[in-house]
Amino acid sequence: MELESHIERILWTEEEILKRVSELATQIIDDFKANSSSLVLIGVATGAFMFLADLVKKIQLPISVDFIRAESYGSGTESNGNPRISCDVKIDIKGKHVILVEDIVDTGNTLSCLISHLELKGASSVSICTFLDKPARRKVHVEMVGGGKFYRGFECPDYFVVGYGMDFAELYRNLPYVGVLKPEMYQ
Ligand code: 5GP
Ligand code: MG
Ligand code: MG
Image 1 (cartoon, rainbow, N blue to C red):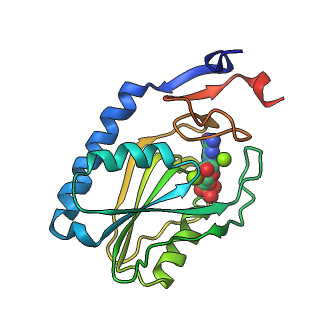
Image 2: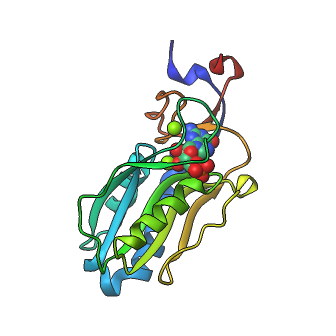
């Protein structure tokens, strides 16, 4: 069965996504070009892998790239509210400007846990660049560190979305667009 037939509705097409990613990259370049050699973009695995790849290709400055992994979801559609870092960064981020790159901010639990962790490791600032933001579901106020900024691609309506890195039960990450699954796919 073709993957496309699992999708009820497309929210953002590949073309719309790449256009927005370029705009975000331009903003980041403007904000960090003066000290880009101390800039580290850290993708939150696995969901941010596609966004991170597209984003860094558009930031042609001397930056570093790494991943961190946080688990909070299991295979369902609800966060368990207690994320845990299961794979840490490899790069020493002490004194660096960090941009945490996320697929989507929902309750905010994952991000606030990761921000505190990176602050403890001595990052001189922590900014957020999330592809999607679902402010309607926020439970935790996400506080940036050291004057860090908050970048977001799109505001997401309160649906469980898949594609462009985001999964349901580890499927659909490879869709180049973002969509909503047909209800029967959850059964
Ligand atoms: P939070 O800790 O903010 O509640 O959840 C953040 C993580 O939950 C995201 O990075 C993402 O991995 C997952 N998540 C939240 N909302 C969605 C959604 O609509 N679709 C998918 N596939 N994952 C989501
Ligand atoms: Mg994520
Ligand atoms: Mg997931």
